[in-house]
Picture 1: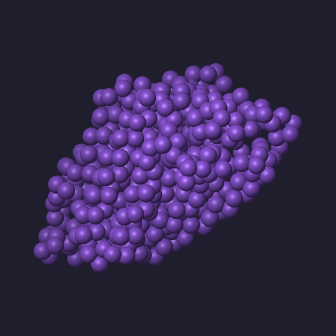
Picture 2 (picture 1 turned 60 degrees about the vertical axis):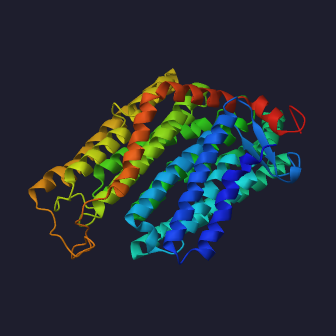
Picture 3 (picture 1 turned 90 degrees about the vertical axis):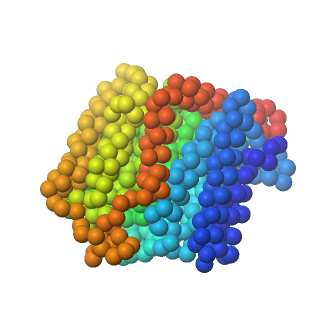
Length: 515
């Protein structure tokens, strides 16, 4: 039993109280410690990916209690990839928050940031659905604090909507857990996977209820229609670095669908077979349409990016809904791509919006370094919209190639291709207003020594430290395209391992094949 597996949960949990209680009045010390903690998490995540690369499912039993009685963490290829994705994104976002001064607008930013990482990593590593609920609650508390960071009436209102929606989801989650435990007597994922297939279909009514409740809960986290309405206001009003970090939050919902509804309720389970995908696929199609038309109709930059996140989640979940290894491989590649693409857009938007009079998509005074920001925005947009040469194009090709079954091909291909076209038109309109039409208007006059004009708009050039995180995110997208072969091969092995239900059960439970 390797203690490395628990480090992605323990490290943020140890550093967060130090940052919150000891270093909150010393911003320099807090920054150094937070960067060190996140870099250490990133290094551990890389090590875990190599540990899981041989296809072994590693188990960490807290207190050395055997499953299903004790709390267990499970490391396989999928959880290792998700932890690495989280730590990589967190490192970029943290550098941006420090360089732009966002972290100075509240004493507890760095502590909340570490608690957020603890919740996300815990959700990816946990081996039972009850602790998935626990880590979801850690996510909710930390993300609410980050959401209202630096205050403001609109931010508080959006934060309240976010909390109410997620508390409703948490209540449904508890109902689902109670129903599932009443039916099976366990909440361990491997034990559920061993017991539920043995329940005859005519006796699995409660299991079907629990599966559907869990799907609704995960759909809330993933911003899937019809429970996607909380996302645009939340992401659009959050501080830009927080919105960039939240790019991984919807992926937690997608991961939960993959993990629970593939291993526990997936193909071959008599009581639930065909039930989830029959609901998930049309909901994902509608989500693509809502995201695309939201991008086209947005009048502000931050909501426009938020709707593009909804559209990307629809594309991702269309592939997930098929529940085949090939489609899951495509979904995982697109998940990694869309996380960095959304984060890059939010980081670039922050550089632009702080140098304009708000985020309205009407022509305003052109920003300083207008050409640089236009280039960064263009790169992020072609990635999100799925245009070559970046990884979005390859991601959508993989998704389309995996959806060639006659019963899904027409709907999926039409939604993805039409949604991409509408998204491109919406982003082109936004880029034209922000960077082309604005060139006819002179930039703001220099203000005080700090570079702020009379309305608080920055008129100074962005420093290399401010631009670097967005450039690094673009570099990650380019790297995904250049190394698409090795990455897709690793993710193919990840998908195959995910669908190996018997192997997962044998690795987690003390006796192979059952508890």
